[in-house]
Amino acid sequence: MERKCKDCGEPLVGRADKKFCDDACRANYNNRRNSGESGYLRKVNNILKRNRKILETLSPEGGGKVKWQTLLTEGFNFNYITDMNETAEGAQYRFCYEYGYLLLDDDHVLLVRRKD
Image 1 (cartoon, rainbow, N blue to C red):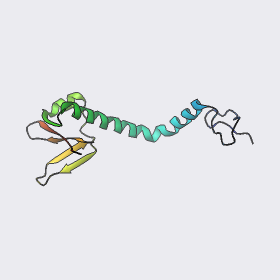
Image 2 (image 1 turned 180 degrees about the vertical axis):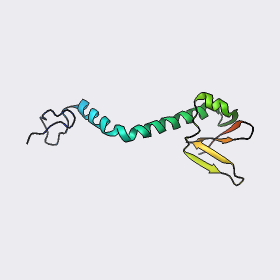
Image 3 (image 1 turned 180 degrees about the horizontal axis):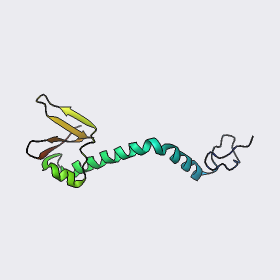
Image 4 (image 1 turned 60 degrees about the vertical axis):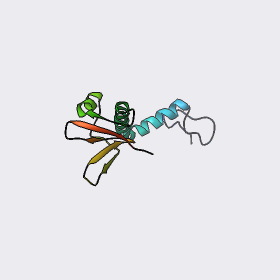
């Protein structure tokens, strides 16, 4: 039985356990195989990383207060968070990794950073 490359179908020469004719075919095959499921994950992770970067940029000292419109202008997406903590008083801190925010009543957002 002739062994063939899993990507391009060319006959394989060499080791008995060889699955691809070269690195390009191996990368092609794995990229195609992983593109469906990881495409959604990649999209969500990119949004979360962008949100984190925006919070980091607007609060270099690890805190501060900005208008929520400023976050929107920078491209922040309020629909994606990694965690949410609720205080005893009912305030909900939403986090993108270690940077977080609290929506205030006066169109402002309190920016915070978790301590390690």
